[in-house]
Length: 166
Image (spheres, rainbow, N blue to C red):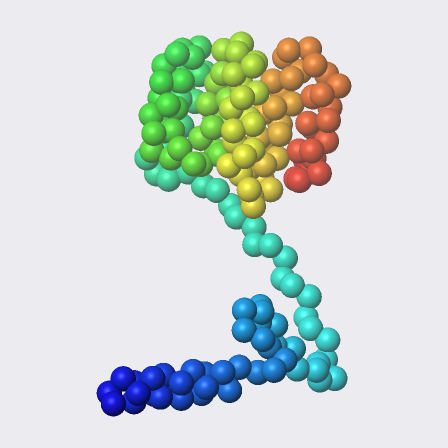
């Protein structure tokens, strides 16, 4: 008797489940997304706001180290200036301005390829800041000029000018 009641309950449950399935939507078929309501006539949507710009700045500790590096560069002590800027990089490794400063010292020391590398690193980090991007392009242009690649330097300068005209 208990077995018959159990089977009867299972049949009723399965029948109830089957009746819940819509004939337009057979079991196992993917569900269709609901259709959006018709657009009401109204004012047109406002254009998307322009992407926000960012302005990188050096923090106080990195700024102090950059000032020291400028003094050491002016004295011709490029290794000490580079070491000072590497300390600044440990403080602000994601700040493109720090990379640009180190690139400028590399350029002054006659390391054009290193300066170019620093300029490209700064350019990758400077997204959203046209001033930092322009400074990175100018560093790249100067590094190319030092290495006699004037045509490429001209293109890099054009990129810099397009971002922030002199």
